[in-house]
Image (cartoon, rainbow, N blue to C red; front, side):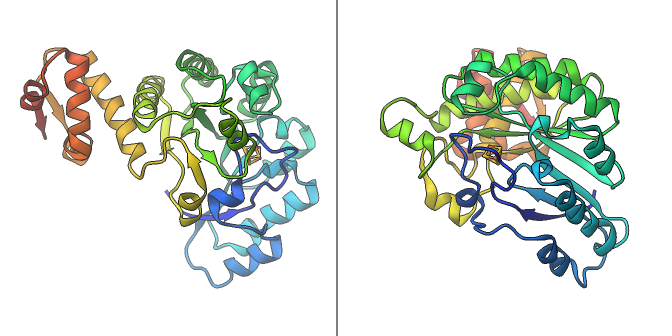
Length: 314
Ligand code: SF4
């Protein structure tokens, strides 16, 4: 896997602003780097990289500008470099634009699909037509473009079942393909519409514990369907820490979610134990007040001490 070189293009290309989003606050990047800025940053690099354009809707730029950003990868990055970008699901509906993108070494197109529930999409002020999203994904699949999905939990009006229904619908579409998955539990960022909803009492954010359990169930199912989770929770930055008004903001939220996912799987596969756990996953069970052991005990109907005795690190 190539080393990633991310460029954040905060809110660039976005038609509106989703209620929960402020990419400038999340990333700490205020100005959108131009293709000239990207070329400058690539100067003198050795060894191929995965150039990443994140933080906006990449394929909503004018085609000429998209081409300029993509040309940076093939003409200015070291040989063998690839490109990954995040965009809205419908942004590649246009045949000519897909034709352009396919000329480049695209390693992954990350589609923002926080939910497929029309009511939740509307509450988030996102385009609200799941059928169109399915059609758009089928088109990308037919063209052999590598897909990743960015999903969320804890959105306004969203419940556990609605998020899992969305995941299952995407899994059916995915089939045997290898799709990457990022899962972002919703945070309330200062200055966003969601923050105003929260202040008016119209939105209740998840607690850390709720996000860990919901996210764990979500990731457990996603793994069963063959998704490849590459990120859980927003990347911690100084800017993010300063801008979170409420919600499940915790430095180890991803680890707690993975602990819950592991506990669910172990208890399901072997309800009585013993449970072999790879040493690299040990902290899921021993860290954070033995969160993984506690969850394993809850799922298996045992005491914490009994569950702890049945976990074997291998
Ligand atoms: S969530 Fe994505 S589409 Fe919505 S405003 Fe943020 S970057 Fe733009």
